[in-house]
Each structure stands twice: as structure tokens, then as C-alpha cells.
Image 1 (cartoon, rainbow, N blue to C red):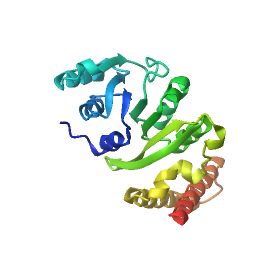
Image 2 (spheres, rainbow, N blue to C red; image 1 turned 90 degrees about the horizontal axis):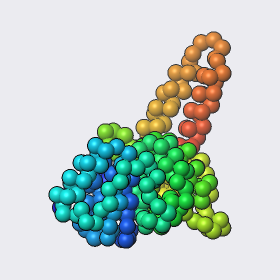
Image 3 (cartoon, helix red, strand yellow; image 1 turned 120 degrees about the vertical axis):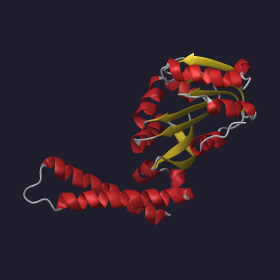
Image 4 (cartoon, rainbow, N blue to C red; image 1 turned 90 degrees about the vertical axis):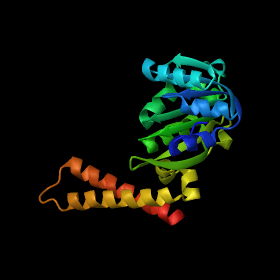
Length: 237
């Protein structure tokens, strides 16, 4: 029985029991194997853009005796997945901009799944905003920490009824509406880290002598806004 990393364990725990799970960017295939071994999913589609990782996943899946339950596909994002083919889609270990592009490129496929679980490692605000505007609703979130970097894992689904969609404010888009409600220890650590970093940069820019360029003034305004978002979150928790 595989022991997943803390990051993949969170993803695993968010996957509901389902018929077919699609593991996009499957890498070594450990998530796919664990979901099948424990009966969370009946079958899986393991996909990666590169042949090397997919070959390694194939070897691991074969060693686990699960080859008959897995379809392996070289795929750029969701391109090789059909609409309504997967109940759950997991897109993990990528930057937020890339995850957003993957979902937008095959929007109908993404919306046809009952659950999406994504693990963006950057650009959280813009990704949550884009998904909200596309009609996705966040149902669960958590934070993970790897190599001293804190980032979210997000569970969501497409809501066709506009009246049931949830509009998020900027603080929620940045730090996550469910994460703010849960107040995990990693959120406090993240807020402290960001506040210290943004405040330090802002003080450095403010202390510069002479007239400041438009770029510096714009950066200072951005930093103040980021600090205001932190304050909003702190006032909520």
C-alpha cells in the first residue's frame, strides 16, 4: 500500500467515491494507484504531456496489478479526455496560470465532471477569479507546504444555475473562501510571511530618495493593496 506525500494525501482525501477519475499530470501515478487500491475510484485515466513520466506511471501501475483499470494517455492537459468521460478530474503540481489555460482550453470537458480538484502552485487570485467567472463553485480547500512554500488545494464543481453561484471578494480570491473559514495553522503562517515580506519591500521603496518612477509608485500601491487584503482576512478570522 502506497504512502502518499502530505500534498497528495490532501488531494486523495478530497476525491469522492466515483466511477472514473482522470489524473492530469499524473507523474509517477501514485495518486491514481492509491485511489484504485482503496476503492475510491473504479477506474482511472492517467495523463501526462511527457512520455517519460507516463512510462514511469505505467510501470508503477503494472507493478500494483492495476493495468486493467487504467487508461494511459499522452495528453496536453485535457485534450485527450472526452466530455462526460470522467466523474472527477484532478489537475495537480502546476502553476495556476497553466491550470487555468488547461481548463479554458477544454472548458466543456472540465464542466462535464462532477468534481474538479486542482493544486495550483502560483497565481491563486487570478485562477480563482477566472474559475468563478466561468461558473465554478469552490466546495472545499486546504493548504499544504512543500519546500517551504505554502499553496492551496481546491475542490470545486461547475454550477449551471447562476443563482447558486458564489461571488468572492478580493481577499477570498487571494486566500480562499473555505481556507479563511477553516483558519488552518498554515493560513496564519502564510499571512505572517506575506505581511513581513510586503511590508519590508514597501518600506524599502518608500525610503528611496528623489522622485519615484511610475513603476515604483505602482508597485507601492500594489503592496499596500496586498497588505489591506491581509488585514481583511485577519479581521474575518
